[in-house]
Image (cartoon, rainbow, N blue to C red):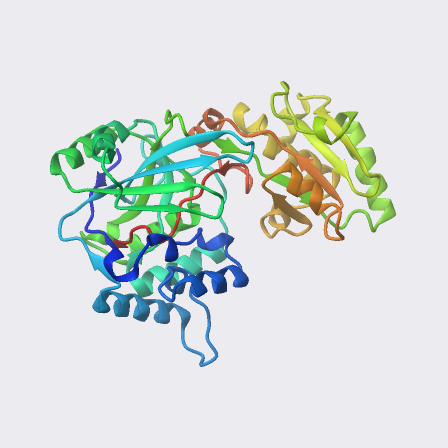
Length: 420
């Protein structure tokens, strides 16, 4: 049972800071030092100053700096808090990496933190301890959710808020990818009740933000009793939303070409495990191909590309014994188990730490990466169907990292959820 509620949002005062576009940012985990500096050049009030705090030369604690800055911005009127509880309607009009155009809809609300399980909240990817500790330290200091978790719901509440979006949005932002984000605050208690009732029996699947949800659980457990610490900020999109798309994340491998023996072992292993057919650059994309374990493959040392297909899908029954059928047929899992572990001898810890592995969001970016000295091979993946993501989660399993690429990302800085 999902407990979805409106909340007294803290948000930027547009009358004080001007357009929201100057102060929002991509998710913290895709921002490097140069990106952060550029965002702060746009505005000293950019959300990265509190959502991605850094250590300063004076040795001050970055998390306490974030908390102090948040308080200062609130007292000075840069930020303002709604007197009435609200939910926020969000539409994202975008062009995907494949060139297709869509509009994805969602509702920003606070959701009661719950343990994982059937009929409740389910994860679909593995998490790592480092990011969780960082987000927990930030939450403890600021006592706010500063960016939303993206979750998919088995019931769609968008029709209840859609009438409120027929007016000019409170804010509109076009990001670096060309996605147009539009926000409407909705303070009608009747709509709140309808949204809560619609989602009461819904199961929630975390699409993006697993580390932040683990943080929310840890923070809830630290503070007993009733209160806002038992909730977390989410953007909720129905699984049947026509604008919901999943794109693949392609794999890049390093440390192979410089070792002749390893490269030979790698090539022989691929030919034993996969049917390999030569392909040009335009025929490398496996999307639309039917079968288990279909990939595009490019080798920088040979300068050649191939289409791969697993020779014996029955092999997966022994390699992934105890896993569900949906997991065994997951391309990212097949690549991890057959190629990374069986052929290259990598461990799950190697994959988690990205030792010898990198990622690319497009085929062009993957092939371009092979032209430098950093990577030796690229595997091109098909997108994971949303239904397969749901089936794996329903089986209580978590996918390898970067198994899904939900696009577009949610901006940080749209609204904040107070936890005290």
